[in-house]
Amino acid sequence: MDWLNQNQLITDNFKKTYKKLQDKAIKDDPELGLDFDPIFDAQDFPDKGFELMSCDLKSGYVTVKGKDWPAFILVLKVVYKNNKWQVDGAGVINIPEARRAKR
Image (cartoon, rainbow, N blue to C red; front, top):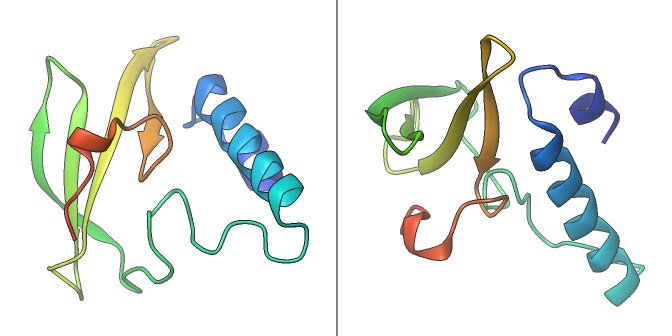
């Protein structure tokens, strides 16, 4: 959460949704919390980062794939705010289920 709060490339909406999801998971299961990373919608993710697959400027949805794991697809939502692009969604955070990557 500290990293998210300090990151200016992430919207406040993303940060609020992430915290709400984490808080609910800890309340529901204090020992385990979430059993996956909600940003990647997975337990593991590509070690070497991602490369662009597609970008829809109208909707703000960006699809990337793992450089060293091309079958790992991730959908992001970006918005232009305060004269810069910011991430407003990734994985299960602010991405509707119908838009999420299929695994």
